[in-house]
Amino acid sequence: MTNKVLSIKYKCLHPSCVVFCKKGTLDLEESEFLDLKAAFKEKDKFKSPKNGCRMGFDQPFKIISISETSDSIYIANDTGYSKDINKVDPIEELKEEHRILLKKLDELEDLVRKRDIDKLWYKVADIENDIMLHSVEKEEQLLFPYIIKNVPLGVAYINIINEDHKEFMSLLHSFRCALQENEILDGIINSVVVNLRHHIQKEDEELFCMVEEVISEKDKIILDKGMKKMEKAHVTVEAGDRSKKIVSPYLADRKYMDAEIADIKKQSTTDDWSCHC
Image (cartoon, rainbow, N blue to C red; front, side, top):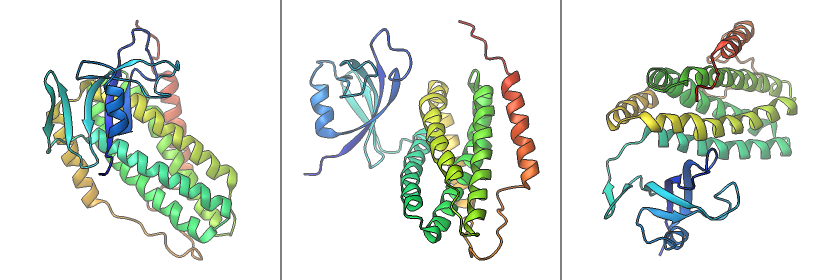
């Protein structure tokens, strides 16, 4: 019998929990999850797994929802769990795209170590396409307008994230241009990989959590439909011939890009970040 992997959304019930493990998602094998769940009589609680708590202690976690790889979702309730096959969760889909991108970054680093320029040429183009669809189209054109309208302090986060998106695309394009000259710019690609991983963590653990606090089931359906339309309309750009000069359709000229990044940085520093606790 195959041991299913469950994706469990949870909330830490310890009163002092403030940041990292307050809310989140854990991917656990079903057998491990059942062992952790056996620590409590309540059906909607389980014990934090090893390294699940940043303080290093066993904590009570409350189950928000559980999803299988089949995308079926089980919602915790007083009697157990109710199953909804048709449940849509666009935020979880964005997180899954993050997980796929993280695997591609691992592959990218391996190709850099091997100094495989030809395969790097195609891998970077593949990652550029992913960022374009995920970040520039789904997030900037669809999710961010929703955040601006519904999430307190959302605008300040979006300014920072937009800056990240533009820098990633610009640096990846520069890296690909260098590959045409048979050069591997380690500094640039290492910066992209490290910052992109941090960017993904920032979205998963901060921005997306804020969205999940306010989003309704109706809005989930609207966002999901919009994302599906974008997937169908997205035009994948081929890597092309490495021997020929490339002009990325995703980028304006570099001076315009740099000016736009500078403008976003200026907005970020002028936004009100003061605490109103």
